[in-house]
Image (tube, rainbow, N blue to C red):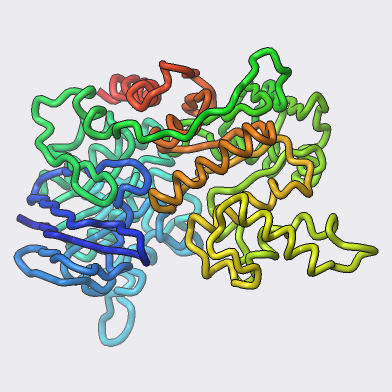
Length: 501
């Protein structure tokens, strides 16, 4: 076997990301790695690439065993990883990207003619048509993807890992990439293919392994398996759900959206009533996050957004906040949290003006407000001076929620992007309880985006399924379950399969 993982374990504090994972990928095999967000896929890939050092287990590549890998050892062992976010330098040429850090030299001088010839041979092997001297930033996404693969192949790997490789590709580019994967399989590479798209699994993969909560749930051949079999392997049994608050259909919408249109989105119409929690569910690239950002005014948009009967005339975050509409972004570290600031400053940042007197901060009032907030949201530790970066992912998320639900701001509509991304199971359910309390007790309208069907079922009163920037289906009541969500979101995947076949 080319790549064999045995008993791989990895924990972060008290969170067990991998719990003894076994995975075997043979030469000339395409092996699909599946599972919901938080199942352990990314941690496993990063352990193979040397970003994380495992706590236990072994990684065997081409007959050689390792307890752990550094990034250089991973490359030298023959593992090549193509991440969803490419590692290319847009300002450099195709050939310079391919050989960056591993330049061919002759008598101490870079052999540019030799590199061009080698780059052309690699690109021809993949069916890429781009010129080797062209800047990568000028290429369409499909050609960039092939340049990234050529860069990986330049190191003569034995195992290739593709992480959501078609997320940003057109249907034509997807077809080209899939033909490339088939060619590399015939050339004997062991290929691990990570995807949410079941049509890709059906078209490409020989075997699949499904991770669930850091463990292997299913590992099997795909011979004779139907789409239904794959969905049943991925779907998780319903957990104990927090109680749902009352929603009154006759109430006028707290958030009303008509004809929302912008780059990659629209037109979108939706309503969210007071106390209602609505989920936007879709795969990567479906337009969920862009929709939330347009509602908040971060991106150019057309169409109307009405909050509490008042139409927003300006598409800007300041106007949205003034109207009572707030956004908690999915990227906590990059877009939400100030890690070096205290928990108090993070949670009360927008409300400091309301607590001040004559423009002077009142520390005592801030501490009292933080203590009340920490108690209502179960923030641990409840130490106001502790830096936000010292908190767990779940408690950091509660601090961000606390910014808008501390009772000091007029938040009537709360937008949440991937509200439990990167938190453990216990914190996830605590956040669900917090969001449900916000909706039921404060009558806040909540609209959240998620790629996790389990989360949508656990949290939403209604789910709107998005594909290609549009709402294509609505599920509610007894019809809202994981199986129905997966079938709805993969319907267009079936259409793509017919287009590519």
